[in-house]
Length: 100
Image 1 (cartoon, rainbow, N blue to C red):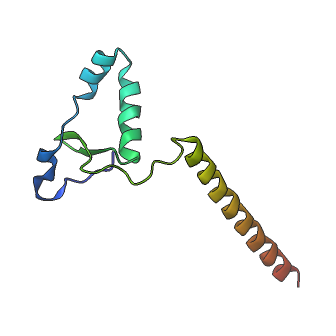
Image 2: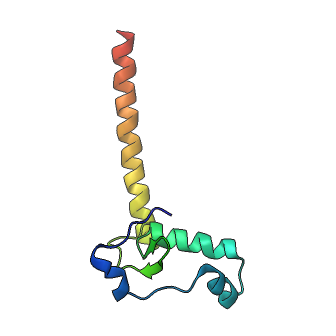
């Protein structure tokens, strides 16, 4: 995990998650499942991991979690389509310049 210690020991103010093994036991899932879930939550901004301290609920909710709703997926797809069109146009210009 790529995490830094929150400034001014802010991590003490937020709820700490149980350890991965305890979460795996509690939910009756494999340890790797919990590890993947915690990584996903961290990537989405829901939790903050601090080495040798623990994983804590983030002090604020992420502004946007892409792909969690139909509208979110549609927006993400629209952005990808626009980016693809832009890249295609740039490639065509470069290929045209190269042939001259």
